[in-house]
Length: 295
Figure 1: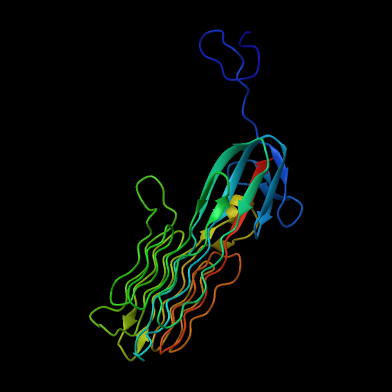
Figure 2 (figure 1 turned 90 degrees about the horizontal axis):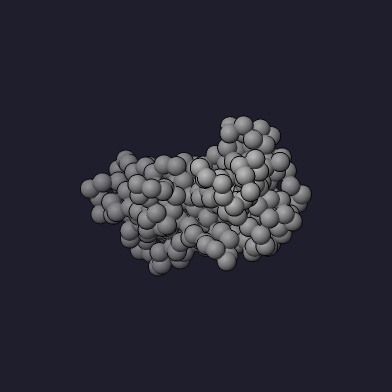
């Protein structure tokens, strides 16, 4: 066989190695939608999974996956300290990967973490991904004790200690750290914001009686993957404040202003807002999975 055949070849005559192309598939919440021409010069069709489902491969080939993990809940206020503001929940972050598939795959969409009681710290958001190959868990919870670590965004902190995004190194970043609470105040009145997909949460500020919660970190603009207008996912929840709650970003919810934190909406991967004044933090938002292929 000679080099006149389509495929990858060495400098010598070699066996045919097929050129890898994109496949096609169905599944998710409806028919495939077009991205239009993206920044890479290609047009794709994409499928959207807002819950667990099956990707039905109708033609083997490459598929691009855009994955948002479940967001974590904001921390709840301390059970006995009225002027204590908890941190916002870490966002679910963003992962993009290209895989070759020749058979159907089960898609998993992570749940947002439920709001915690006043006596318990929140857990991490649920995992999203491809069940047989990999899943990645979501953001860390905001704490009234310390911010919890997450694979993606770290939870906003209390007592000056924020959670860390554990999958953040020189080779790949899925999310960023949470912000610390207001400094130099054991019974602080301003929790830090949860870390988001593209930036860290900010620290709380102000005074104990007039605390201002930190803002959640920014989410990822998924329009770069699916086209259309700006649509951010995986942002951090705002920290609570005894005066003013911090703003959530990129799907993250606002922190409580001397009260309960707001819950993040479904399929945003956003972190919940922190609570204060003996009030609960908000629940995290569930994740979402996009699958695209070139047309």
